[in-house]
Image (tube, rainbow, N blue to C red; front, side, top):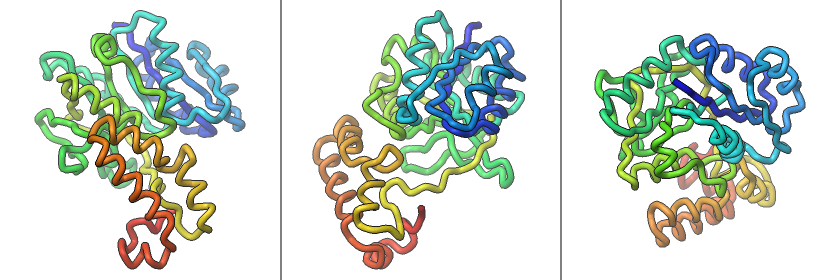
Length: 277
């Protein structure tokens, strides 16, 4: 079985090392395609020294998650792999993670994407994996559960699926690429299932992309249009693609109003929803 793991990282040397160690502990012959997107903390040197078989690619620091993953996947496609394994470099994989992914794939009885549930390392609360049609995060279950909105932390995609729908869309900069890929799969009658249990631990990212709190008007819009924000143009592209032009336009206007209004009005309207970094 030929497996290609694809990752991107930036200045998380310790976490990247832990992730790769947990991967190779389970899949020592897995080929890894890792984009180091301009790290300055010695990540590339660590990978070259401790994991010399990793295919190490380099970015300028402006790829971020989706374009980094796209770059790694593009390179991995040059090989003949049966499965592609998406990994976030901040997860620690459990010893049975791949067995669970494959077992779920077999239970699907046909082409399917398998999204791994990720739990908080301390609380054991599920923090990533996938959401149902009501946007509720899926919990462990003895049965396969349909995923509507997919997180890309640990995902198994077969070669045959790539032949049908391709790889990640490079139009997305940091986020939305994983959700977009899942919705594209569903549109092409490719189901997505969550694993029945957590396959890795991680840490939730509490960042608010739609609005930065406690800064000036200019700083709010600078963050909004940044790769780590909720860029209205990219959101419009995503929503028009999946939900139609009217939905996309409404959300585009909403994001701008949300950032035009001062903090005190937003708090009065939404409570603490946007009171985050």
